[in-house]
Structure formats: structure tokens, C-alpha cells
Amino acid sequence: MTDHYGKKLLFLLFVTIGFYLQNFLLVPILSRNLGIETYGIWTQILVAINFLVPLCALALPQAFTRFSAGETEKAEIARNYYTVLFVILITGLLVSFLFFCFSGFISRSFIKTEAAILPLLHVASLLILLQALSQYTVNYFRTFQREKAFSFFQLLQSLCTIAFAFILVRTGYGLLQIIFALILIHMFIFTVAQYLIVRTIGWKQPDFKRLRPFLLFCLPLLPLSILNWVINVSDRYVIGFFLPVTEVGTYSACYMPSMVIMFFYAPFYVILMPKLVELWERNDDYTLKKVLTYSNKIPLLACIPTVLGYAVLYAPILKLLTGEAISVPVLLIPLICIGYIFFYIGGFYSSVFSLVKRTKYTTAGYAIGAIANIAGNICLVPVIGIIGAAITTMLTFLIQMLYFMQKSKKFYDINLNWDYLWKCILASVLLYLLLIALKQPLSYYGDSFLVIASILIGACVYLVILYLLGVYKKEEIELIRDLIR
Image (cartoon, rainbow, N blue to C red):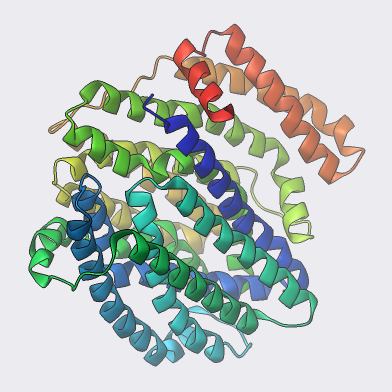
């Protein structure tokens, strides 16, 4: 599509594998060794951290990317970078201190357990600051499409998290030591990344006059971290408020397989905005639309059969993850998957608002989604349990996607191509019927064999069906060849 784009995607694919493995493997590591209740506590703590870290950043990393991705002067880049870094440091200290002070209220109100968790929250307050700093420094490499450095730091974080968690729980330690390990990981990443950045652009004193255009860009995005938290993870807190903490653990365990949708989309999303900014500044309309089209089409071809595959294999997958035969509704994981497909498709349309610097529409879309999400969860979770949270997730992202599609056309029509969609759905339905037929004979050899064999056989059959239906085009095949090279 563009020069070296396939190679960048290949590096980012490895990043996504590492990130997905981190989230995927932590489920059995924690739930099998520490219990499903402890895993639920871990989930609640992570939810709080994932909410507060973006709040520390104040959406300034997005502004740095938007105003610096097309910049060539190192001095200008350095002033932008250190101005934002200083602000994140100050806000991070403030947010971490407030979290420390209110940790007692959080533990009493949302984490209903007899376990002593206050020390965990106190230590997690330091993790908030260090994670905000490390994420911003790594964002520098994403902004300038230095995919090797970005991939290194992301993989380092994922692999070290898995390794430390496994070693600590196997040697008799618990969540407190795991959180300490995460603090050390983020501290190391921040230190090394900052060293590389200084070597590249040097040091410049923060210029707070630059904050004005940054904040004009960011102000509409400031509520975004709160809204994004409400949409993506507040359902755990609603479940924890109305239901036992074990239900939080069960729902989170079901959430992990659905994150494979992220696995398919993330390599394209990571460098999407820097690449779009570069093409937008060059007025390269043709390439920009091509990048958007294939960044949606290629992962979507994998996502649709995944949804139907989970409808058949959800039970053995959950048993492999948790070590227990968890009873959940058959549609729970597929509904979450469909919701995240809507989320990522909507994200392509919302990228238009950043390009034209009308970010208030992005925030408006998230506000609509947040209202729908919190209202849906409060209404459905007490009545029908965790399946209500899954239904709410799907409807929330559908509403958000439709809003972004409608509003973005006012500024720029990205005109994503959908002529292949019905063929993809037909191939997925045929795959679904095949998996149903294979499930009984394959399950004779155990759950692991059933899942692995179903994925391998299903993927081969699905690709053949797509080929026979003429879904592949020459350009897609060339892109795959770029990835392999």
C-alpha cells in the first residue's frame, strides 16, 4: 500500500501476539494458582489503573502525535515532547496521590471480598504514575513509526509480565508481589526509552506556550478516558456492585477470548493515525483511502469466522483458561466479539475527526456510548446477569459506530468497501456447520486437541472457500507477500 507498510505491520503483529498472550495467559496463571476470586480482584485493580492512566495523560500524547508526526526539526520535536512529558509527570503524581487517599473507599464499595486488599491498592497507586510515563515514552516511537523500537518495548512489557507472574505465583507469592514486578517493568521501560529519545532528539526545556494549541486539540478529548473506561470496563464494576466478585472473574475470563478481535485489528491500528497524518499532510487522498480500506478489510475477514467459531468452542476454551468447567450462556463471548468489531470499524470513521481537528465529535460519540453502556448494564445485569453486560457491550459499540459513520461524512468520506462482506459471512456459516460436525469426534482426544485442530482445520477450509468465492484481490495478496518478506 505504501513504502515499507507491510514490514511495519509484521513487526506490529508480533507486538499484538505478545500483548494478547499476556492477557490470555494471565487468566490461567492467576485463576488456577490463586483462585477465581483473586483473579476477580486483579481485574478490578486493573480496571482502576486503565481508567486513571489515560486521565494522567490528559489526551496530550494524541496531541503530540498529531502535531509532531509530520515534523522534521529535532528541536521542535524535543520541545513538544518534553512539554508534554512534564505535564504528564505532574498530573500523574496528583492522580496517584488521590488514588492512594481514596483506596479505602474503592475497596469497600466495589471489591466485595473478605481478603485484605488495601495494601494492593496502595502499591497500585505508584504503578499508575510509572505506567503513564512509560506509555508516553513508548508513544514517541509509535508517532515516528519506529516500529522496531516500539515493538521491542511492547513485547518486553508483555513477556516480562507473563514471566514474573508465573514465577511469583509458582513460588508462593501473590498479587502484591506481581504489582511490585509491574512497577519495576514500567520503570525499566521508561528509563531505557527515555535514554534512546535523548540520544535522538536531545534535551529542550519545556515550552508551556505550546500547550495552548495542544490543549485546543485535547480539550474535547479530555473526557475521553472517563468515557472510554465507562464503555470498555465499567461493566466489571457494575457486575461487582450487583453480583459476587466470582462473577467478575467469570465475566473477565469470558472477555479474554473475545480480545482476539483486538489481535486482528491492533497491528493496523497502532500506526494508523501517524500514517494517516503523514498522508493527510501530503494530500495523498488515494493512498489514505487505500490504507483505511485494507486496514478494515483484512482483519474483518478473520473476525467474522471467529465469532461463529466461539459459538461452538467457547466451553473447552474457557476450561483450558481457568481449569474449571464454567457454565456461561453460549452467546456471551460471540456478543462481546461482535461488539468489538463494531468498535474498531467505528474507529476508522472517527479518525477523520483527528485529521480535520474536530475532535469534539469523537468525544460526543464516546459520550453517547457511555450513556448507553452504563444505562444498559444497570438495567440488564441485575436481571439477567453477565449476559446482560455482553448484550450492552454489543449495542453500545453499534450505536457509537453508527454515530461516527454519520458525522464523519460531513468532513471526509472514507468510503470503505463492503462488497466482500456477504461472501465472508457465507464462508463463515459454512465453517460453523463444519465445526459442529467435527466437535464430537475431535473432543474424544481432549479439549486441547479439539481447540487446536478446529482452528487449524477451520482456517484452512475458510481460506479455501474465500478463494473460491473470489474474495482475494491482487493487492491483498501482494500485501501478504510484503508481510512474509
